[in-house]
Length: 512
Image (cartoon, rainbow, N blue to C red; front, side, top):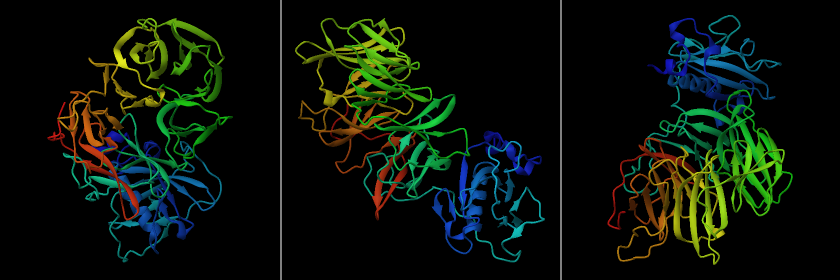
């Protein structure tokens, strides 16, 4: 199957090409048709007298990589948007008057330019010659098209990676240093480029899949369905921002701001975010609005489930609707004479709870299924953690694994609960090594440190591998395990490097 078939649009070379059939994503953002000093492609500036020609060549090259055609959003100096399709053969189709166009702007159109690619003119209107401005003569030398966007192939990593990870990147991209990239459930990478654009990249090729206007930071990032529309969501203790993923004409986010700055906790482990304003008051995202509800005393908020707030009390779990109606259901296997320390909804249908004895030094971890309340697993006789040890649970991209404090939770496996304490340490003579401090959670492994020594914990086998003390740990791995993503800085530029990876090699420091 060729790429054009995979994308669902006919190749321009096959005849009968309809630009409206080109998939809505990715969309290239192109500026500078009427502003030669502001020519950009997806936020990357292009300069020189032929800057716009080279910008169009970039779009045509992207069309080639994507199977024959790609959508382009032209933006004029006054902000007018002009939807187009650019083909790999150099044709430009204006969608602003197309009946299926998502945007039919008013105002003056972009400058109509032509681009020579292998002797073929780039035309506006699918090949119509009349009225087309030739930006070059037929005898002018045509530079080769620029390389694909964000490949960075061959970039050398300026730091030492862990054993089993190459130092030469398969692709790399310069990023904002204070916005750590995030991996989505399908493996794609969300990041903010050094130019300030919010983008989604293919995990294996680094090619652009989607772009939007950044708010300048990446907080908790998720793919959600809000009011029946897919969105990219980012939420912090003060607001939630949503970028529509099904509308290429609206790259700016919609923002919902909390009416108070008094937020005790932001719960991100459930299907929708929930903000604990005080112990018995919670604001949560109910469809497409923020709703505030009461949590009955002495229950504690645990997250969201099925469009409701979830709280856990001494006898069971409580579902609270956006209309503040509460109903209680039992939880099986709650430890007798233990008090709830904290609880969190994990994903769409599991609830993890930590219970402590009267002295507060022994704990039991339970995992229940929702909404039935059946006990899926439990760990007893644990050293009771403190509230400071229980940061918000972190999920793997595929949401199969969670790390909560010093516990790893994998609901749908043979070992749903395990402790990250008591692992073989980097020093074989140390019989009491510290716990694994997790820095990155992937679909395959946990990366972190034990007693400040870099380590990788294999999720399937439980084996732990130690690495050089100077090794820079990955922030993510590709879903197939062939790439590891490392952030490093060179000459004041911070980049994300996608590095070929093999199975990790165990060091002499020990292996579980």
